[in-house]
Image 1 (spheres, rainbow, N blue to C red):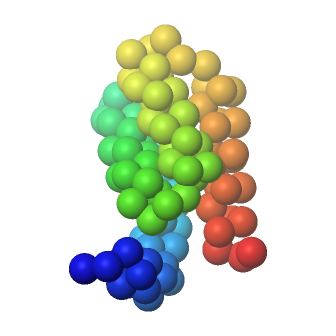
Image 2 (cartoon, rainbow, N blue to C red):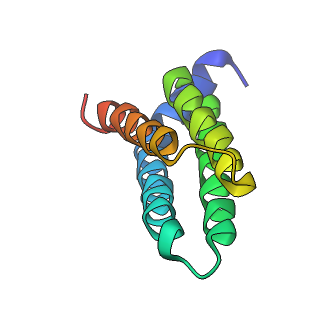
Length: 108
């Protein structure tokens, strides 16, 4: 397979990627909003971290380094929240930054 063919395939898959990325981001927002009042906040943060990790990997696959970096920040801060050592404000800011990166990709 040539590089041009790979680029063509990735371009064809971009709309599906963006839809999946939006779904992952919604999961992140949902888990962040629910964690403080959840019976098991740790479980909410685990799901948040998994979604951020998936978004980080997908962003890397599709060649979106800013999205990948923003998702990595959310993943890292989500791990901190799981451990009880993170700042809720920092995690919230990282999620908002991730949303901004995704918004730029969805609405260039």
